[in-house]
Image (cartoon, rainbow, N blue to C red; front, side):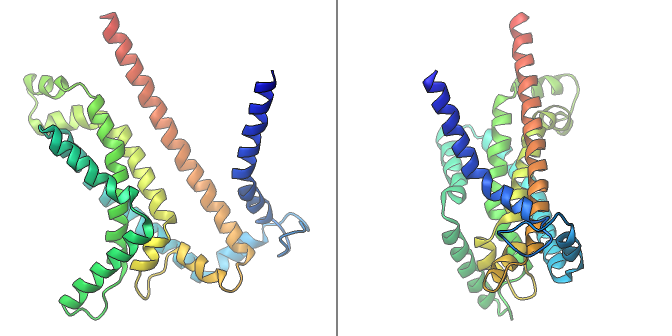
Length: 276
């Protein structure tokens, strides 16, 4: 009984530590005044102010364009890379590819950001470019760190798939391309969706790598918020952070629903195979 009570208390403390800052942010985004200590009244004032701030909305648009572009590219490339790794015959080559794939995830962001910046500046000067950093350098950087997460989500789905299914489809008259789209792609789809959601959320809130690889004229939301902290972060940023929080939470719920549905299908398939 004491163990159960202590475990509940410990869990409550952990959840309070994790979510209390977010809860405070949500509450004060609806505060009528600028105060961070006194809640003077419920109001949508700062949400209205946010909609009038053209510069902030421009950075939101830039962030969404960058995140969507990086997600699309990394999802296609990551799916193709997962297919290639899965079809490697040599166990050593596969282990080497898995290790190379893990490096961007384990490498500190500041090291990745600085190394990418130096590479872009070197290449830009090599070709005589007037400016080395731009939207395209940020896009390449975001694809670089999003790609491993897509591979990490798609590869297990391929490994769970019955390898005889594509061969059975081709025996029944499908071409290799038709077998891929009718058999392999549906098996990979939950992993592709989860990987795309992860890539989008990672690109959406990245600051360190974006800070080192961004050029003049293109600013993302995390960089703008960082520049505002040098002066004053207005309450309309709390409103924007609240909107982003709910968008991210929705994507997380979708990802969990996709994973749960895929796990249920896998259990049903194993149960049916045992019954047969």
